[in-house]
Amino acid sequence: MADTKPAQRPGHGGTLSLALDFGPLLVFFLGYKFLGMIVGTAAFMAAIVVAVIVSKWKLGKVSPMLWLSAALVLFFGGLTIYFHDQRFIQIKPTIIYSFFALMLFGGLMRGKPLLKYLLQAAYDGLSETGWRKLSRNWAIFFVAMAIANEVMRRTMSFDSWLAVKVWGVTIVSVVFAAANIPMLMRHGLNLGDRLDSDEIGGTSPPQG
Image 1 (cartoon, helix red, strand yellow):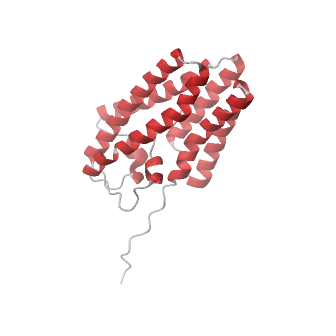
Image 2: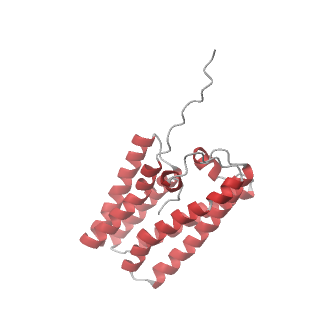
Image 3: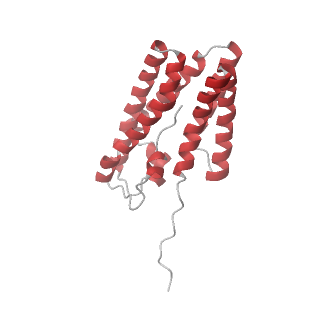
C-alpha cells in the first residue's frame, strides 16, 4: 500500500529571514553611532551584500524584497559616501515603501493579490479574499510608512530618525503583521501548531 503520510513541509526560516532583514539596519545603526556616517554607510552596504549571499546559501533563494532593498542600499549608500550627504540614505525607505505600495495596489487593480505569490508558503489555506485583504492592508501600511518617513526625515535630526527607523519601525511592522492574523484566520489561514515568533516575524516587510 502506498504511503499516504504527507511529506513534511520544510521550515520557513522565519528567524533567519527576520535577521537578514533587520541585521544590516542594525549594523548601520551601530556603525554610525561608533564610527560615523561614512563608515556606517559602508558597513550597511557590506552587510546587505552578506544578507543576500546568506539568503541564497541558507534559504536557497533571495526574496524580491531583499533584492530591491540591496540594490537601493548600494545605490543610495554610494551616493551618500560620494557626496557626504546623509539625505540619500534617508530617502531610500520612502522609495522602497512607495514601490511596494504601487505594486500591491496595481496587483489588486488587476485582480492579482501579489503577496499570494511572495508569501504563499507562509499562509497555508488562505482564501483568495484573505489574500486580497492582506495585500490591501500592506499596501495601505506601506503608503503610511512612506509618508511617515518623509515627515520624520524632514523634521527630525539624523540621530533621532535613525533610532526610530531601527527600533520604532521594526516594532510597528511586526505588530502590524501580527494584527493581521485574526483576519487571516477568518479567511482560512491554517496555523496549526505554527503560531510562533518565527512565523509572524518571517512574514514582516522589508525594513528598508
